Image (cartoon, rainbow, N blue to C red; front, side, top):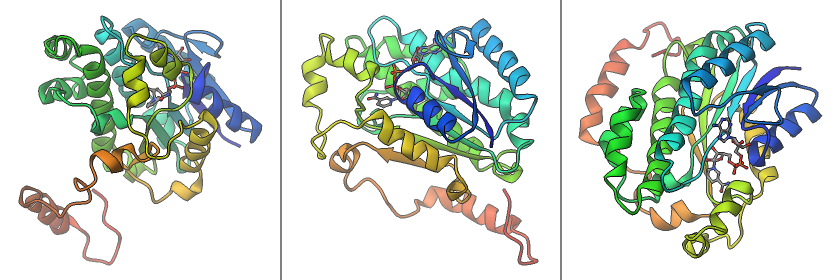
Length: 286
Ligand code: NAI
């Protein structure tokens, strides 16, 4: 049985994941603002450092897996909190947990993105780059320039940044090469307190009219099933993937955007990777 850290373990999808892991006999170190083993506010540097210290103490320097489900939904006037929790609440903790994950045999990490990454317009690319570098102030300034839509833009920017950050890390020697499998799950609307608060808000009618071809919202239990699969040996061959589970919204809105052939600009990278591949029949590591 393994030791897993789950952020956002007090509610919604994180709670469903923590319940399933405990039911299967694993030890769960839950992190949240309340009702958790580690109480920490991931929207502050102090809170993130507390979470890191407490989790590393509780796990004894070895983690079989981690699930980053703590998150804040779109909300006007809280752009900074959204990006701190949704980006730094995963990236800073992941960097600190990497040695403990590498100490386990085949650790798995699942980070929550969102299908808002591919369905929200006006997200400034520069803000995404800043967030990936952990540079929050200029990113928030750029996001706030999207007057009237800065809440949804902050949310989408945070989820794009954390997803790309994971894809960059996932393939590296110190992650994939150390046996860690780092992947992202990108849900559409899932019936949790987060979604309910949006349905109850002044933008509730827009949320309701958002197209979902499956004509139903997801449930936390369905998402927990996917996460459990991504934490299992079935995910040994899953690296840097973004698994979209959204009732078909992405397929509807972005039908022909993906898959697409390799663009010319990616060819040097491919040639470099092929050049570095071992000649002795071993599988290459990058
Ligand atoms: P939820 O609101 O039910 O649970 C989120 C948890 O994060 C809560 O327990 C909350 O206390 C915790 N949290 C929030 N701010 C925190 C902070 N500063 N420090 C520590 N913990 C904090 O939300 P839900 O729906 O279960 O969301 C889980 C993840 O899935 C989030 O990352 C969310 O962005 C993502 N997601 C959810 C969707 C949905 O429709 N429910 C859709 C797409 C993505």
